[in-house]
Image (cartoon, rainbow, N blue to C red):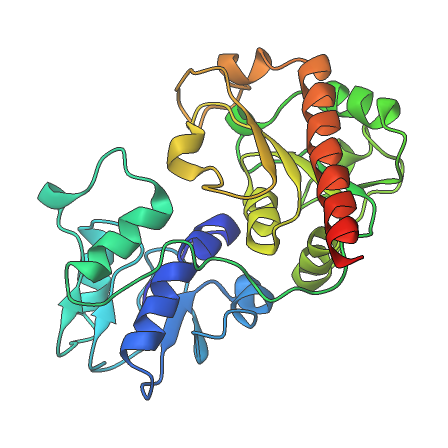
Length: 289
């Protein structure tokens, strides 16, 4: 399978990967994806082997029984897979690309129309511990369009009455220091463990948001140019803020719709999510008693 993209892209493909595993229980399933994602790939039991592959780079594999394009609609990704000379190829073509379909459903649809059953709700990763950790704030994003102003994240952090850990991706430490003086910037495995055991996650439309979704960690997610109906969590203890505007996700400046989200809105959403979690825990204790 080819999915040589980012962390969020990988995690939205988990139901499709598990569908392939269920359909071919004895096969060796190889995922062509970037090496830096290895810690995340290791947590997806449906994958046997990671083949380090950069986006749209040649795939170092010969004659697979089946090649599956979970990367895009081509032509480059299709050409890369055809170059491996597969016996069979499953892919979208340009004409049948499902516009306006949630990313999880898009890849499940592709497999299901080829006779491979998928459960789009089978996206959770195995728990890594109790969710008793700090509140995690991740102010970064891969593009400026999806980056809520850092001074607003800082105002949220100051207003919270909980322990806060600020996380930083590669090249984001200076940005993160605006929110907290000692940002966390460990390995991908350490970041996933932190998010998986956090009390709450606050971030934009980023890979960290998808980690929170995968672990069922309560989250407040700030969406900008891309609507959450395409990339947001489909279910779970998550509050998504979006002001109904779409735009250029690769722009350098924050999306105008993202800028309409206020600090007070975020704090109200935080209170709502934490209150729901507290009520759920109280109910669970009462039931068990």
